[in-house]
Amino acid sequence: MKNKGRKLKISIIGLGFVGLSLAVTNAKKGFKTIGVDIDKNKIENLKIGIPPFYEPKLQKFLDDSLKTGSIKFMTDLKNALLNSDLSFLCVGTPPAKNEKIDLRYIKSATKKIHEILKLKEKYHLLVIKSTVAPETTKKVIIPVFRDLIDKGSLDIVTNPEFLREGTAINDLLHPHLIVIGEYEKKAGNHLERYYKQFYDTLPETIHTDTTSAELIKYANNTFLATKISFINSLANICQNLSGTDINTIAKAIGKDPRIGPLFLQAGPGFGGSCLPKDLSALINFSNKFEKTNGLFKAVVSVNQNQPIKILKLLNNFKFLKKTKTISILGLAFKKDTDDIRAAVSIEITKLLLKKNLKIKVYDPMAMDNFRKLFKEKIVYCSSIDECLKDSDCCFVLTEWDSFKKLKPEKFKKLMRTPNVIDARRILDPKKFSDVNFKAVGLGN
Ligand code: UDX
Image 1 (cartoon, rainbow, N blue to C red):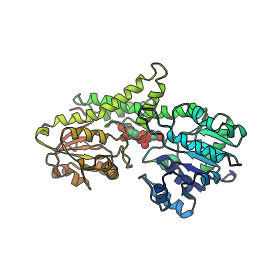
Image 2 (image 1 turned 180 degrees about the vertical axis):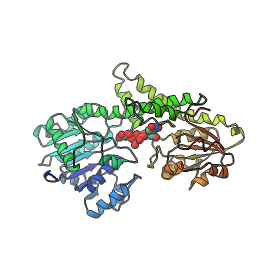
Image 3 (image 1 turned 90 degrees about the horizontal axis):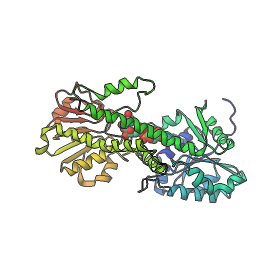
Image 4 (image 1 turned 60 degrees about the vertical axis):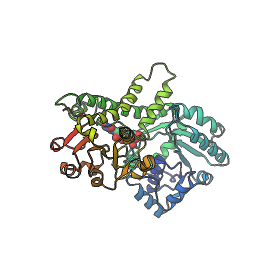
């Protein structure tokens, strides 16, 4: 390997999903890494190897890094900043009530960071990872640090991430792109130096200004959301068209290289901590530019209606008037995570509760999070079998691998009436011809 200079020391500020994934991956790559968070409980748990959420590979990377001593966790921001060359700012930017993003954590963290870096003599690079609306770096963050930037002791770059929950660590190890938002080449080059140390071969990198970097992140997620609402709109047509299947339509159009096959899986609508939030934030941000966001609003509206379209599949089954128990398999917003933020399971459960139905739920990972939300209003099951037992209709809402293996016999054996609604298209309709089977985007 070429001599890439002394390995930089890293601090990660804010140990949510992005920050913690980034921290353990840096540590595993041999960077001396400090993870900082204001949550004392989280830090104490991390010190003894207990992560606050489930993510594949996270536990192993955490254990390995604690063992080698390449990672340290603390609440002491000053210690972290003074003992690192480069900090990633990963504090949350949750949605605010007015659909804007809440910059509270960004503002308080940058204020504290500035106070500390004033005391530091050596150069420091502050990298903004948190997803923020266009112009936030320029208008909100940089002004806080203006004196240090002018003095030459600090640079700030905007470096959005494209990590998917469930594959975050792989995404960090093999990114499709690195975006560096800089106000001058020198600032971005400092970050590129870090990435050259991280990767044997530098992944494709785009240098741009900070505002464009922020907009790229929103554009990326909005485009993905648009593809999903597009395919779900077509799925809703297929449901009314005998003989059609959205999966065939998606497969066919996905072959066109101008369209591509990914993000054309029809389902109950997109959820998670990013797509819905970023879409709303972009709509809100672009409200000030006249008539520029009609398409984005339509994407939201299709997504909001999708759980209702899924519930309408219930009308195909005559049982509803005399029966009372519904099973939901899958609560997480997608497989391989315990995250239920903006998960469709929440909306569907609320709608079913309004119909006075008894609800039993099961998910391999997300039970605890769901319990916090619905408390004693529904029944929590510890297995698929327990969830299906004596039920009158089963909704499959998350595409967990363990659900993909389910055979129709199980539904027939355990359920009172084997009515199945596959909202994720993970079960083969041909094999399920013996049960009452309905699926998103499947014509009668
Ligand atoms: C997303 C972006 O993919 C990632 O780049 C960004 O950094 C954060 O937001 P994530 O929220 O982890 O990642 O989930 P993603 O895999 O994008 O899925 C979002 C939602 O869309 C899920 O509810 C998923 O089930 C749904 N989806 C995805 C579909 O309904 N159909 C598809 O074809 C793909």
